[in-house]
Length: 70
Image (cartoon, rainbow, N blue to C red; front, side, top):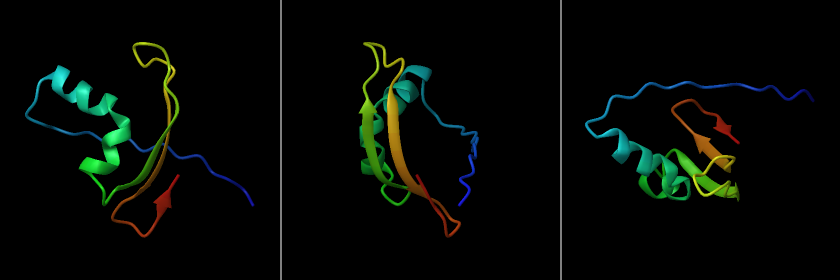
């Protein structure tokens, strides 16, 4: 069975500062807490360095389409 790789780009407009948005997105472990209907499971595989560079996160997600994505 072939495994395909896909990249999904999204563009959001929010009323927040860049620092506020970065703080929320950096806390990837909490994604399933603030959006449980989309982020079914989030696991930190590698924390990366002190600034998060190299961080690896495994996500199990779903959206409006009847697909679930790992």
